[in-house]
Length: 120
Image (cartoon, rainbow, N blue to C red; front, top):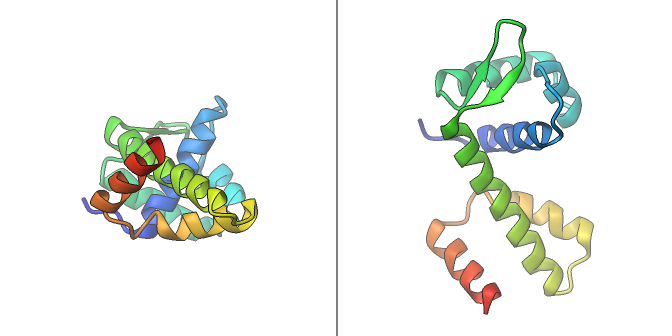
């Protein structure tokens, strides 16, 4: 299943919540993202159908292996692009906001080239 930008944003948020080490449900995703319950419920259904997340019978969410891989990829892009923009002199807040937009449209080839350039 191909993820849309919104799906990637949800996965990144789920990864962030997962890293906190505290079990969480859809309502926590709502609060973290500032989205409505119906919007998050629909997104969770799509992510579940695409096998990116699992939801247990108590409603707790976890990333599947596929979901974790996708979320980590998006998070890595966000982090690296934020770093690049900051090195170019962009303030931290703007860099993070712009990186969030860029991470969803940049090709793997371009991302890899930026990564290799920054590692030099």
